[in-house]
Length: 345
Image 1 (cartoon, helix red, strand yellow):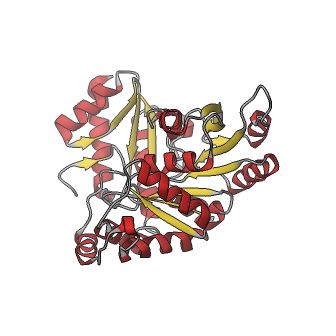
Image 2 (image 1 turned 60 degrees about the horizontal axis):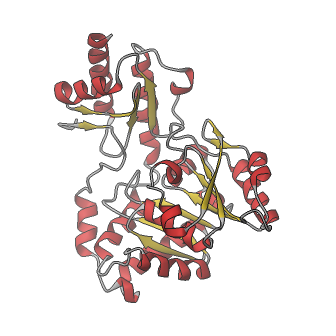
């Protein structure tokens, strides 16, 4: 059991002793010159895992998505984004500011897009309309509680994009969570895209970094965009060493996080009225509603029980399990929520 049970996000993990050793022992060079051997190894490993020609190490998932959008599009193009997706809500309008594109929203139901709605939303370039050049999907879907996009939906969207001459980018920040939960290899999801990114700094437990994967020609152009945005790193091998360690040791263990999330949801549901859709989280996220201000719950959990949670809406709370949360921490969090809830209702 940890002194603090931090369930705000899977980004809060600390690198353990073995990962720190891998970082300290990493051979380094200047990555802007493409001379860092550990970065090169990480990029090659990521490309191999997703069966893509090449990969690019990027400081963050937000930058990775923006690099992909700008690389795939021209100013004045239209891109289709999930209205509740990360790039639409949480990336500060970077696509408009830096890529100069128009964003058009589509809907998801429980985190799953409707391919036919997307098909009906695509524009061909005319005298009056912008060209719909890119479709972006998020897998797993954060705001939908870590929902997994089924592989058949991903395949259909990719087919539609190809029929219309558009590209597909997958914001796969938690792509390996989707793969573990669904039993579908990450490479099969990646095959339904022209580019895909995954984060090292979420479920995989690294201190920083994402990998953007695609064709060699795409990655060559993306490298220039990364540099333009200030993302060129020098002796980045120490960070890449953490990534290599994570890919070797922290992918399959994501199933533990999913099991802990299910136990967390079940335990909370014993004393807290939860929506039926919240009772069986598909991956590592638990969402539930509160009849009182969510921040009153999260504040009391922190101050009185050393349990941290995130109020994402006035009456909605998110809990995320990760490698720094074990089974005992989950039971402690359940008891803390039960105690605070009893006082607040």
